[in-house]
Length: 335
Image 1 (tube, rainbow, N blue to C red):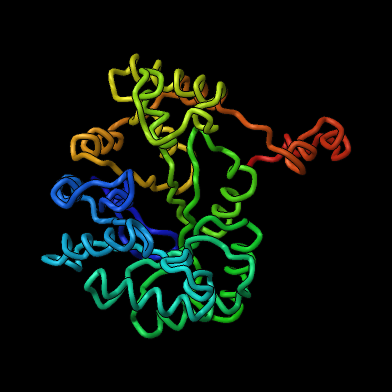
Image 2 (image 1 turned 30 degrees about the horizontal axis):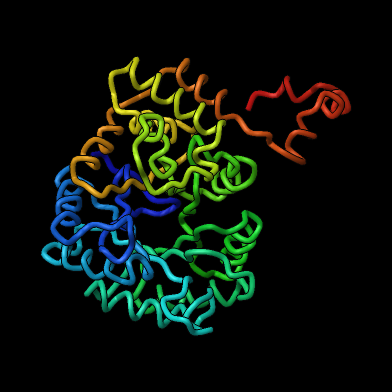
């Protein structure tokens, strides 16, 4: 496995990130200790060093087991965890505010059995905490050496833009990464989130890269899974996209998961897909996606079948009337 820099930093991370939401049996999608260890060993054995967890995953078991798995060589791994979501039915045990931030980080450090978190994600925007409170709290954690880098997840583009602009002006640590749902089934981030990330030099770590398994073709084969039939991931549109992925995979002689991940990796900006599995064999198959490069005709086919309406103002700005109003000069500019 190759390595890449994370955002506008010198941090070296793997080209695929291991998601550990399945570490623990508290959730239906989880796996037991031995199986989780086998998944971790498969990833580490392939040279992977970028690990993604959260304080709330499997009621804290994900962090606890991950801490045990990395204990023998802690500094080899880049451990990313998250705070925001509730782990207790208490008003101050959720949200982006400083009190929850500090408590969550303290508890995560204990479960991970480490003295620092390499990358701390704001898990989701709570729409109540001021941006400067979040940024100053995160900067304090970095100053104390408890956190090394910060990222933000599941947050509107305008808030991330405001935050990184404010951080630069005030000399605080800036977000280096953006974690969002992004896949062939979910391309709406292309409207604002992806262009914003590119402008600020943020690495994107997409979750849901395989659409909950829909892009592996499992539901086309009539297999069971965690995505219910009424989900948009199994709509007529999603089924058509999955059929196209499976068709291309058949032509290339590779698993459908590899095609879906290769498409993400070839989007023209810095993307590190998060991959996970309940079994080591599944993960080994997925990791092979790093060896696949899709040809232009396959990329075009996937782009077309999964295309979205860009929405306002993007479609308006590309309309014929606006182009004419600009004297049709934009097409003369080399960009």
